[in-house]
Length: 290
Ligand SMILES: Cc1cc2nc3c(=O)[nH]c(=O)nc-3n(C[C@H](O)[C@H](O)[C@H](O)COP(=O)(O)OP(=O)(O)OC[C@H]3O[C@@H](n4cnc5c(N)ncnc54)[C@H](O)[C@@H]3O)c2cc1C
Image 1: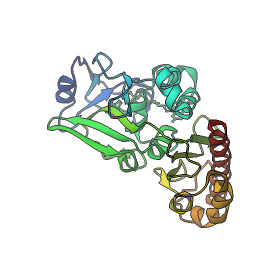
Image 2: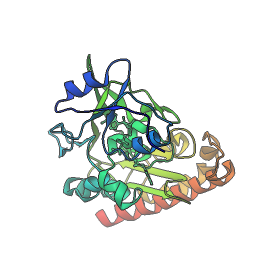
Image 3: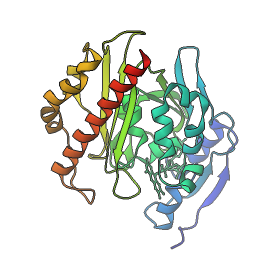
Image 4: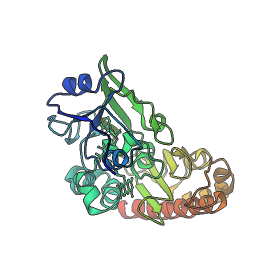
């Protein structure tokens, strides 16, 4: 099917793009188009105007800033993040996640900003970015604001972004401990995924704090609070056993949708398996770093 007719505009500045989309949201930002064009062709989405943001300079930068935070421009493709030397050095788990998103065609043009803004529950980056304590910087007609990755997705295919807010950049602290990610998938998109990031002092043998997010099983990634609690202050080598001791309780707290990816019990089981594999990897990584 063809999309319903629409206008097409190329923006060369952020201000132009924001004003072209319009406060009423009659236009939409167009980045890689991998989600948007499919949805328009299926006539699930209709827009009066597509505003192409590919020509706006500076939205595809990746840097470690002066505040020791990593900044990833919203226009970075999965392929670019997977191959970037800064990401590979400081967050190899994110590079590997991006290297395995979708297929080569989607990775080459699909962007991290487009992934987040679409709000698809069966996605990889939102889970990892929640674990990494990321904030997403949006610019609208009245200025910029930051939204924490945990608060960005409101429900399935719905985010807190206003239609005329452009996502500029994703920012998170440079990790100080192991960062791990596991997913399980039946088809192209993840059925369940788990991201974990430990914060640790240099040379320490204990975990200062941990962030654990489980994604794809509800409408948005969820924290595993019982696991985060038990890991806080714990010697690294006790982590696996400690997680096992609270796992059933932690998995019970998850809000799980039943869908074609499986039943709630099955998804909870997968989340537990993936979490324990993350923990094994994190312990091994810390062992190697000593
Ligand atoms: C076959 C297939 C398999 C896939 N498999 C996976 C997978 O395994 N894991 C996974 O995580 N994802 C997967 N995806 C999703 C893929 O990651 C996204 O399609 C891609 O990242 C979207 O980026 P885009 O630039 O093409 O977005 P677009 O399609 O251009 O835009 C998507 C939405 O975001 C908005 N938007 C885009 N950029 C911005 C911005 N900077 N600011 C504000 N709004 C913006 C658009 O208006 C639109 O609403 C898959 C997709 C396909 C088609």
